[in-house]
Image (cartoon, rainbow, N blue to C red; front, side):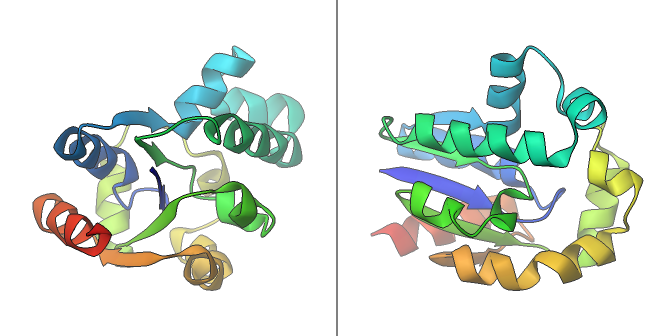
Length: 159
């Protein structure tokens, strides 16, 4: 089974993804890291040199690569939902990790990851643009207020 974690930047996809993969005995993949290795560039460099549309094309190609994998937890980039056709490529379960705006802001403050779109937009603007798309993509929605509780909730939902 393939599990795709979707949600806002800073909602905990990477952190929860590692824990969930370990509990399930699955491989863990961070989609942004996967793209960086394939492109030999960091995400922020891709955005700067080629723009968002080029990056979204790389995301789509990565989703196609994942279709051959099994028993994997994939922490997607926060914007993978911007292209509705990606839903068909996400052959597995889409788990929407929800976190309130204040929690996201606090997590982003302590993160060292450069988030290109947050250089030009606020967290609120991104959330308002994306919230309906997260709901459209999701098979399961989990409030990620606590990693252990969220992992337990996901595992129960997968039974």
